[in-house]
Image 1: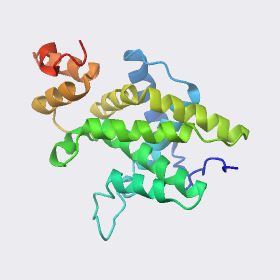
Image 2 (image 1 turned 90 degrees about the vertical axis):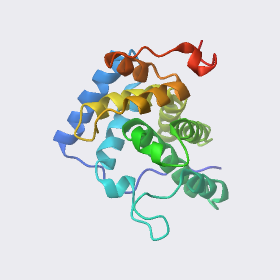
Image 3 (image 1 turned 90 degrees about the horizontal axis):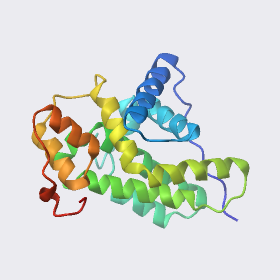
Length: 213
């Protein structure tokens, strides 16, 4: 029998100024973008943001990979090759969590990498989907299955909501209009399109070769 989800061992940040800020910001972004999300899923993302507000938690210093952290593909490989269910779930959860936060808050930085935002969206959504399929029947596992299922099916919507959160925090960098257009072309992001319009640029549907028409 598979074990239930391995809950993060590290203590959550309990600074109410941080958690309340992210809760209000995320709730406002989801509401404005008309994204419906269960309370448990919102709580999960808020705690994730509070945990990753410390850069060393999101990008732990690694002797081999440096401060940029381990590539997602290797984290996925760790999940596939894991010897126990707990190890597999921990690797998949790390993969989904990092992909969600990086794609949502640090999309511009991906332009300097070999992979792009669509890769992070695909990898993160897949990781959460696999977590949602765990077979443990405990109450805790069922709760997390529902959260991971929603994170998987609405992954891009949550990425776009986090993009809005990032725009309104000190984490936001100066807007790169060309990068916004590239993100819109790759993902069809409604939020990226809206931000482009605020800069006087109307995204052309033809540019995405009919993917979102």
